[in-house]
Amino acid sequence: MTDLLLAVVVEMRDGAVAAGQRYEDEVLGLLGRHGGTLERRLRSGDGATEVQLIRFGAAAGLEDFLADPDRLALRAAVGEDAPAARVVEVRDV
Image (cartoon, rainbow, N blue to C red; front, side, top):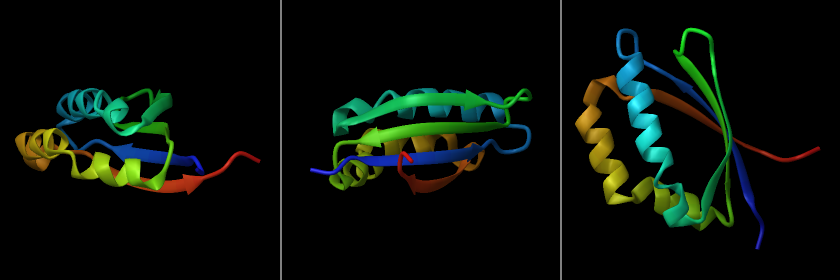
């Protein structure tokens, strides 16, 4: 089994920084259900950007996390205020 390490750059929507941060707080709490762990979470001074290092035991964990009904419901609830994320698979060097 190969771990999957992700660097996630999250950009909060203009005027919706607090809503985006609350959303991230809640969805990151779902990682453990799918074998994921948040290794590091960094935030810019203005709170509009986050960088997260997330590890899954396998790629299937990420797939299950993305399809989690609770995550999807949270995303729908925040609507257009949901942050945008860029996900990059990375490795230790």
